[in-house]
Image (cartoon, rainbow, N blue to C red; front, top):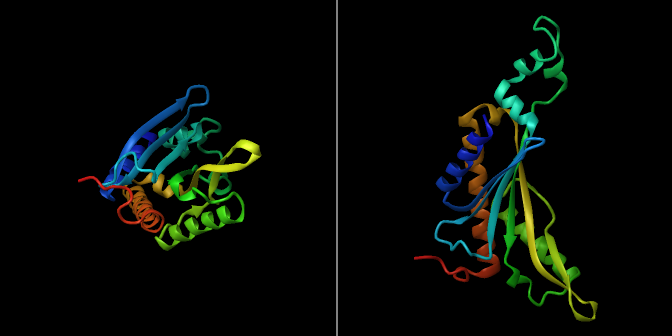
Length: 210
C-alpha cells in the first residue's frame, strides 16, 4: 500500500462509518520525504464548528515509502546479491505506522474548574467515557493548555486526548485488511464522540444540523 492509498481508504471508511470529514491536509518534508496526513471529523449531522471533534492523522516516513514502492526483496537487492543469505526478515520488523485520533474537547466544560485535582478528575472521566464507548486504542492522559491570568493564577483554556492504533505490516500490504482495520477504528471514533457529547454536553448542546 502507498501513502495515497492509505489516505484514500481512511477517508472512505470514515465517511462510511458516519463521520463528516473536513479540513483535509497532506504535507511532505522535502529533505527526508516525511509525509503527514490529517483530517478532522465529526459525526454526520454535527456542524463543522462543533467544540467537540476529532482529528485523524498518520505519518509516513521515507522507510515506509521505500518499503511500499520497492518491497522488501528489492530493498535487500540494493545491498547484496540474491543468493546471499539475509536475516533481514527474521531480525528486523517490517515498517509500521500509527493512526492517531486527537479528540478536541469542549472548553466550556472546563469553565469554573480549578487547575489541580478537580481538573485531573475531569480528565479521568473523559478517559472512562471513551473506554465505555468501545474505544480500544492506546489512550494517552488528557492534556490541558494553561494560561496565566492576573495575580499569577492558572486557567485551563483548551484540552484534548489522544488515542492511537498501530497499522501493522499486514494491513499495509492488503487493501481489504486495511479497510477492515480502518472501518473499525472509525466506528470507535464516532462512538467516542457521541458518548462524550451525551455525557459532557447533553443531547442538544451542539445544535445538530437539519
